[in-house]
Image 1 (cartoon, rainbow over the protein chains, first blue to last red):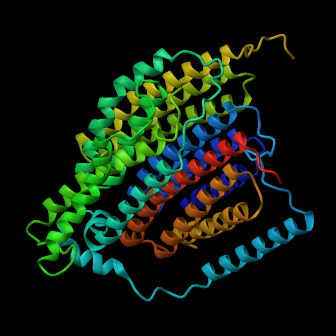
Image 2: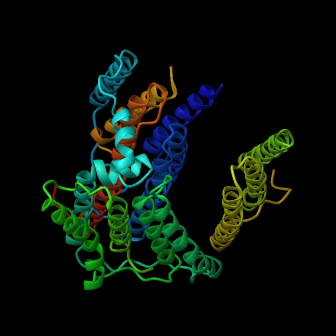
Image 3: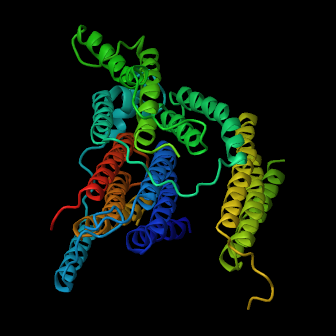
Length: 314
Length: 103
Length: 96
């Protein structure tokens, strides 16, 4: 019975993705993509992965949707369509019908092969669940996903934040001077939305701190908390309370790098004991919480900067 | 006692699902933006309230139930604001409301 | 046919859809959508296959969490590059 629901959800996922990639109007496509993200969050909940569901709803559907819609707005509000047609909403070239058919045929073949492989998989050789469950007691937290993220595979998380910093640097590097966006007769700031975002900011901040704190024992943690804080920043911007970030001042740069530096510092200090990121069991919980707090601040700044440094003040 | 809680929870969830279905039918069938906003902002949030109440009756402890119920005013505020923003924008770009005599 | 296997199958189809959107010469923004769909498909595949016997597994879930955040950063960078190219083309159209 519940499998029927899962089948319907999976079908809905593929249908939404198909529509997002095939609908003519790009705004429609982006909205379909956001719906896809929300259905995906439901799928993660069905797969017993509430942490991923939280992150997908906040980051995958929310932040990515905001980024895409903002890019569309910039391209629609730009000057006359460029003569070469190189705009973000226009196809780059046309493909002959036969080549297109060949690509689709190849896609069908690869898809069928993947499905066949999935159906005929042998039982898994390694089962990490037992290992994780056994080591969870000494890890400092009681939620398995947080333990894996911050303790067992802490190295991956450290490098991931560095990757995020690199993405931010790349974005700052290719910004260039802001083109004077042809401001259409934009309506003045919407008063009700401004009031809502003002009232919502303390609620969102409190929820983010709670999610960070609860991440040690329940689904939650640094990533979801950072996503909430970044969403607050985006909300404040689109209701015109916070202007776009033209340049990233020293304080914001320091904040963005602080999480990585804290993590690296703790890792280096632990290196003196012999191994990278092997927490002493007595301090593991406090160290993890400290690292997560630093990560929340940094990630929130980075994610907010990924949006606010691209957009133009409306 | 738990049988009563389970039964009322089930009834509330069913009512909530009915409201959501009604709201979705409204979204698909109503003729213009303004009427569709009615369906979404009102009916769907009422359905959400019923669903949350039904789930809160099944919660493990009071804290969990209160957290569930906290969702409702937040969604209420958000959907009201967004509904107003959409309607305001629709009026600014001169979308005429549906009149009964447009076939 | 367990839940995990079902979503893994959906993930495989999403992956192929997204890959096709990347290969075909579509609008740059749509390719960004395709790349996101491809990533989501890969994540579903990873977690679905690991959990095909039903119980939750924390290691692939942590990996997917990392992947989602990196995915949004890559999307932001891709959009910034696309916007920059479009702005440059508007100023000085290339002769084709």
